[in-house]
Image (cartoon, rainbow, N blue to C red; front, side, top):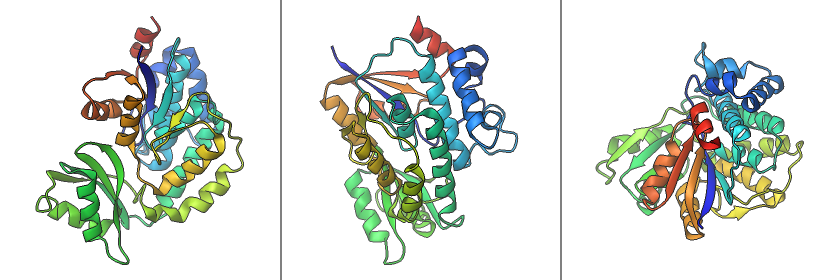
Length: 306
């Protein structure tokens, strides 16, 4: 029998109306959704369900929204047997909650703080990100090294799947890459709507503040190994996990390598837990030989539980 991995999406998967169907019909999910509002100083559920002010795309709201949605689904699933957990960037915090490393109430405060620090790290417009299509990671690294200068940098940030690598750094260089990308060999370069140069070395500036904040919470060893973004290998020790979560702020997300590690170690079924099917699409591009299940709605939950 093959092994199973559960995976949790990160920023970019959010959508207005997320988890509203769970709130109205699934009691285990409702309790989690209510708890997020009790812990935070704003109405997260209104942002998730209706988003009247257009705040869902702001990272300090996006992050708790995604964590809450994924955890609400996990709470409602029955007979979910698996061997590993992983998440993409912010999604790694959903994995920490699922594996008992952090309590949900603590994690939701941590990701809200993480989002605040990330969005405040640089004045708007200083740093950004872009998706590079059609090149491998070594080719992208080489282009980034060519474009970077002593005082401005651009670096690979998300190694998502073959032919899709996100870069991060100073906006000036992101724009240069976008305009010159085709002549440098890329099929396409798509600037992303983000408020900063996430997962680049520029984000190291917030690491001490973030570490000081997360030190106040209790961290426990993981119930199942978590394949972490930074090193693409499984960890269960809470001290190592916590250290890696700080490093994750300014290190590339090694998603493709993580999936390859899991496949090499017998995983043939990946279950994505959260809104949309972003990670399912990436896994499909990494391997056509694995089974992929997406669970994001009340109907998906009922179908699984039956």
